[in-house]
Image (cartoon, rainbow, N blue to C red; front, top):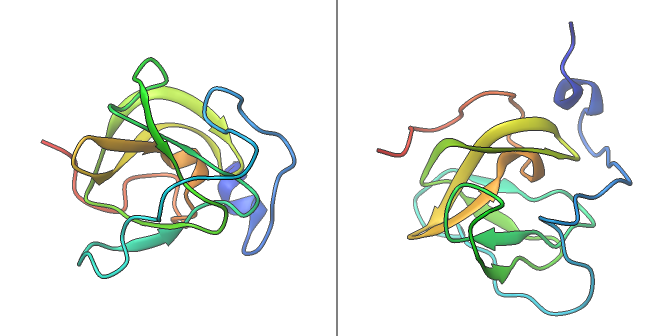
Length: 119
């Protein structure tokens, strides 16, 4: 079976949004990752993604990534299952100390882990 992430391919986008993870409107903070030494990946085009204090939708929102952001992945871990433009996953990406976003909104090119697990 072909995964949803692989079927989307490069440059594809999905119209649906997960309200618990995505906020519409202006504002947001600078993207993490540039020059951080960690592998950097783009956030889904057209989405302002909530950054949370832990790997799940039950954690508080600490900031919102702006449209067109890229993020550096420090590590990845298991958390709340989320559906986004790149499929359904329980993988969460640690982008800074105490900052996580669902991998369902990050174009890593894989349905699995692409960097080390958070420990």
